[in-house]
Amino acid sequence: MSQHSQVLNKSIFAELPYVKADLTYIVRPKEKPINYAYIPASATPQRSATPDVHTVPIFDGRSIASEFSPDREGFALADYQTAVQDFYDDDEVQRVYYPEAEQFVKEQTDAVRVVVFDHVVRNAQRSQPGINTIREPGKRVHNDYTANSGYSRGRWVLNRIGEDNPDALLKNRFGIINVWRAIASPIQESPLAVCDARSIAPTDWVASDLVYPDRVGETYGVTYNSDHQWFYFPLMHRDQALLIKCFDSEEDGRARFSAHSAFDDPTSLADAPARESIELRTLVFYE
Ligand code: OGA
Ligand code: FE
Image (cartoon, rainbow, N blue to C red; front, top):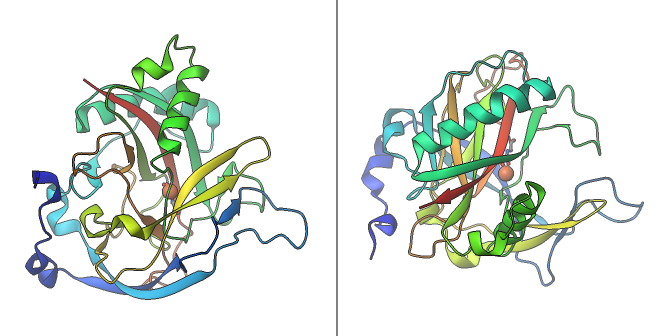
């Protein structure tokens, strides 16, 4: 067994503080679930799968934060000071944040090349239904890509930046890593939970269509499994970032995908400021 898939050390968790919160999984479906990224025609549900809510412990990973690695648990927390002033300014995000984050991901991983290809700002107070530029926190357990769509997204990104031979590049190890951070005050409500990849069984993933007006992507929904070991980092502030491994082409036992979900934290104060965050999607190449 490789070092990446060593068994979970349950005794560590016994010491950690945790909150109990509801996470929304899906019931194992008979047909491939369909999710719409826009408001579909009337009578069509936004999501075809049946939600399956479970109350689970979500451990405070702060005291062991330096132990997490994208290749083992599928996520990691790191310090990251940014020069960006206004994350709502798309132009500044692309001009300042994209190159900064490319450097950050290189420093935090073995990647030799990093291409940022997408970002989403989340703020429930400023989001509008069906408009994807500013969104609400995503309160469903999911992973952004699948064993198939990691490749199709990689090819799409490489075509967009004018690479001559995407398929040749995608024969070497590559991955997709999200960089997630607070953009205003520390996160005091709707934090993000991430699941230790070693606690997820291959059969927990449910490939699902994600329908946009102009294309169909594929993401993973997740079915409940009492083995799942959830973490969060309370009060994430503007000077740190969470790396979330959403895809890895390597199939040697290291983390390939990462189940994650925002959740209603029962310990949040009623007047806590609405969560404001940004996530970047990056295509990474290894030597
Ligand atoms: C992500 C994600 C949800 C959220 O970063 O991929 O699913 O609420 N985020 O921030
Ligand atoms: Fe996601």
